Length: 475
Image 1 (tube, rainbow, N blue to C red):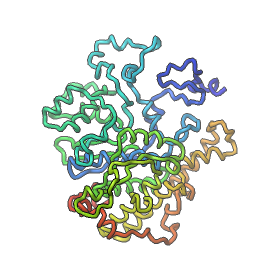
Image 2: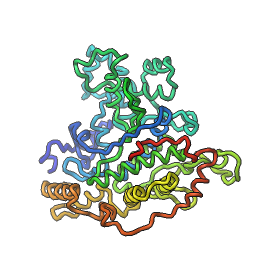
Image 3: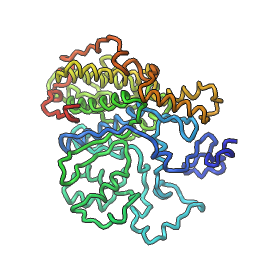
Image 4: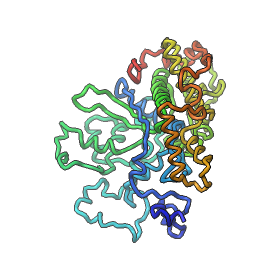
């Protein structure tokens, strides 16, 4: 009945499934336009690093954090008028701009495929002639870590195949770019440009970088490494791209500030968050599940601080410990810690604020943001996706069929509009920290600053002398 009412909601039986990613179940929502993905909203934050090396460190560590931040900001449970079995936009966008040929997807073409493009004169100029195997859509998680520092261990964590353009790699290596970074840049050139303006085709590449920016800006990955444009004073930047836009300015500010503070803590304490890239990809898939923020498990590194045997002379307290171990953790554990076995990122953030002698007013504001994000991880506060799903399923008109009717959609939008404009407070969604007048008097969590300083200063990791801010001091 639904298919008859809406021809775009195409039901396919299993006999019609070609095995090429086409859903073979009527339980799929068929979205037949790119705008279903690229029309989604997001919260993307760009940080300026001190130099090239620092930008590469930030890129890798934000890549590890990107699935957790996606889950914590999940806000996309409704697609094409239906509740979906996902809380995030990521998979929908990835599919909506997946321009790979059958060969690039690794499937054999069928008689139904139009392969006439292969005979066109311009086909010979297509990247890899459209036949190179590409593992992912051009909108997906990162394909490789790019730092060549000691924690990267010579690319040990790059356990996924990376396709790259051989000519681009050769050009970069000949120019003195190290192999790791050269492969990252060259792998962007396995894609064809999506749009080129007619007056920008023939350019002097020594003076204009339009061709580079064309491909760089249409490889939509979970983190983007952004070298400075020529003839500008702009520095080396890193953009975290996974977070979903929130319903109120407070929520958006909270995740922006917490992410900025996380960058500083990673650099200041020389944290090591590396896990195999295949586990990061798995975390991205897990982040899309409903209630992943509070109920999901994510692969995360067990030892994020330097162990004693890596820091020089000291007591042998880490005998038999695998320094590269990783395990499944909840977002709550990742953020808040687990006793003495895992410090948690938020206690380290609070310790950092103490160490830099942050003023009380700023510390109070940041603490409000951190407590709110922590409540997302514990489940005390709903993600926008969970709240919207609950609003729909508890609506009097909902018929337990996943359909979000026009009446339900109207009421939901009205509610969201009131929340976004600050006309309505929803404790289940916003917690107790949305406005200062609603905050109860609470002391910040006690942090043994001296113990943290001692734990992270061994081997020069926590002195702070080489820890440049990741964002301007005036944040």
